[in-house]
Length: 133
Image 1 (cartoon, rainbow, N blue to C red):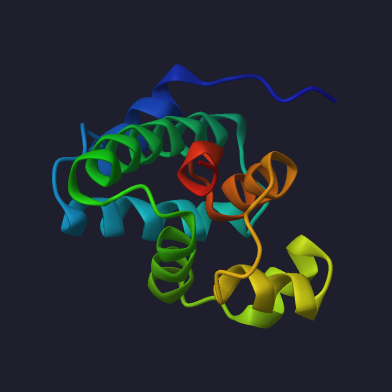
Image 2 (cartoon, rainbow, N blue to C red; image 1 turned 180 degrees about the vertical axis):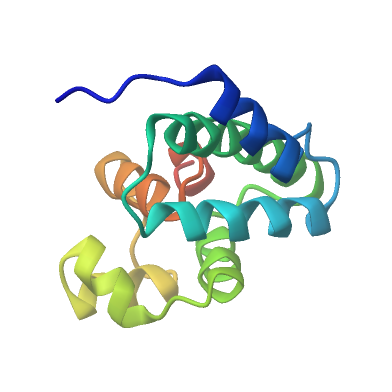
């Protein structure tokens, strides 16, 4: 059975969550919380559309905000996102493959490759370019 998209249900979700262009860290945190909630459940087609919309808004904000307010330092960005997301080094080990790779990156002894940057982007739901020079 294929689930069909229900515009009325989507309209209800939009009314409940009121997604809009993200302009502040607080708004970004709010959107991230909604995405986190949606990420860990089986989504209806309407919820999936809202999820994709929020991810797009978050990526746009983070790309613009971090380019303006932060030097392009992939290690600092990784530490910041790790702290803000509440995730741990153990979570990164699962994504990047080993404790030594994670430690070397976090200590600045190893640069983040394009492949690892993509994995980190997927993991944190941000642009991979934030992690690669």
